[in-house]
Length: 624
Image (cartoon, rainbow, N blue to C red; front, side):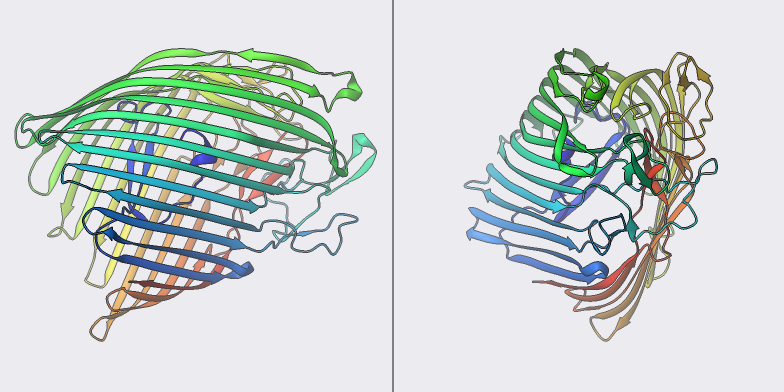
């Protein structure tokens, strides 16, 4: 799933989640420089299985998730159908002139997703798994809020109210996607041949009040809240997104000392984007229009080998050769800056391509039954990228291939008679030509740039511990250092903020800056305490917390466009019956009412957006 439109599919009815850290360019291909999160849906089985989960919370938040599956033809054909529906009422009031009394206007949504799987097993050697999935979303786009950041100080203004905005635009988003995958496997005894074919289609429309406020002083309309130079309301539509992927591979089945897999992968995508700008105070009067189309094609061959040198030492290595091509065209038919004499432009074209060899090698040594150590070196890459949103601009920018070399080492241990598991790792990475997005600055569009060099290093620690038969805790923390090393890399900066970087020829110099949205410290911890009730009941309490340290929003460093430390907590208290078959719980999310900036818009005023509000509710679930 290359595009975020497709990757946004809700996660539900999962069998397991795998987190693979570090570059994964050998088996998972391009655009995996940091790793992957792999979600495996629960597959059809030959036994009846079903569950249902319903919760109701603040803002009339409703969530329903359920699945049912079992045999259609015993031992030959099985089915599993899964659904998830999420709803939240609008809860933000628009206080703008002419909008008074228009309560509960934004931040609501209806999101429905479903999946149907058929598993065909006519023999013990052959299986075919067909997966049809679809999603429909109708809700608010990201709600931007004008001048909610303290000038020269940073942080939210003293009178910030999460429940209200003052806007002259609208915030709306609609998304529809559907896809079909088919996984065919044939077991030849010593080897298994696998074919995975995928077709995906998506459509999106999103419109938002980008300046986050009402009016524009330069347009003769008094602005509020605070000074807003000009109005900005834009929309982007994806009328067609089509993706086709094909993977064919062969893998050995426990041959002994040496096992392997090898294969071929093909990717094809056709993406169309339409961008529209609207007149101030009139969201039905477009005064800017641009269209873009990108065709992407990529193919790769790969191989991976696993060698059991001794019963305690395993060495693994892989290599992947990839060719990637893109064809991009963009044109602007109507400019929102036509009053300045800016007219149509285009078509502009870009056709980047590259050939890359990625690889990895690792070694794992088992010291004893409870402790093992490992090390891994890997090279991954991100294929060339294109940015051509021409509403306000006149250029198509291309970021060349990004390559990363990473070395990691760690230890995995089980302690206290295997009641605890501890993982510790450290990594050092070097990125050449990292692709970065220079957002906003002097205009309402993005530019792509390559940093000559980026240094990354960090340590990570994870803990799971069954302290007693009643108490189970987990904890994780990481320290991550990032630094841009490029004395020639500069970018446009904000229209109304306090820049901390050196200004060279009217641009902010980025050499030595941290990467944006990259906090130095990340931590999380959970605790669950259960008290048995009767023969098969349990009263329990569960809490989870997530912490991030300060982080910068943009490539340049400023006083205003950054967030402080954030600590978000949740609580769940419930009663389970029949060993978890039935469950009744009360829950809360963001229970301390933490309100933090999550990002900003910098080309006009001090616009920002914030985290999710506190939610509390009740949940019922049952397994059948």
